[in-house]
Amino acid sequence: MATPAKIRVLVVDDHPVVREGLRAVLGLRADCEVVGEAADGRAAVERYEELRPDVAIVDLRLPEVGGLEAIAAIRKRDPDARLIVLTSFGGDAEIRQALDSGVMGVLRKGASGQEVVEAVRQAHAGRPCIAPEVLDELALFRDLPGLTAREVQVLGLVAEGLRNHEIAGQLGLSLNTVKVHVNRILEKMGAQDRTEAVTRALRRGLISLP
Image 1 (spheres, rainbow, N blue to C red):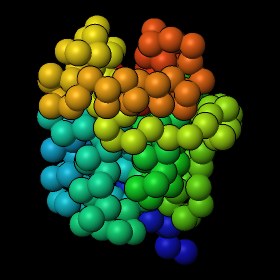
Image 2: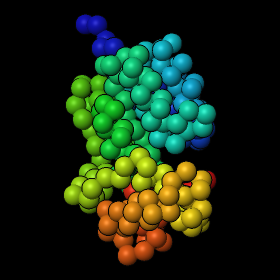
Image 3: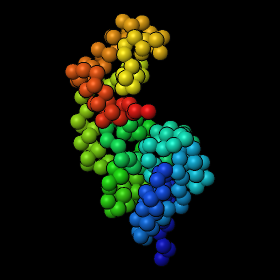
Image 4: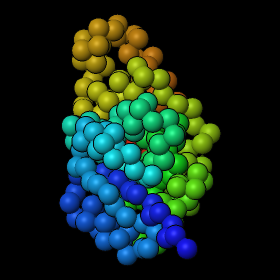
């Protein structure tokens, strides 16, 4: 009787210890093997194109080309790509973007080896594999309205400490327009002030500090 083919996995993470850990965990299973690694988003797309793995595990925060950009590029080349996001960051914004782009699963970096292996098997079988704590995070913010691209831009500058007139000058907007954006941001974020809005946006992954 022929031996079933192993699930070929590409591991993408900028930390060598994470890549080594995933290689070790998957290598212990008879039905999985790591066929390649990449340390940044650009290399991830190149390695995926070269290897065409059955499943790719991709960190969201990558140098050169970000994880979301890499995922989009891979999906453009292979609409049937089976991708799992592995991230250490909380918040729902990037996770929602990843799911919208077609990833099969989402795991935290604190996931156990067995959870990772099971996610790989589920993704290979074409089934979603989202960690329970990730589902809880998504549900927590499910009913909150999203921010527009301009509002995210304004909030990012607020997070850098810019005042309304400075934001207006940098974005080429009127002071009144910036005030309207800030008020809408506070309302959408359910925040009492700018600091609370920034704190909540950082937690959700809507913005990141430079």
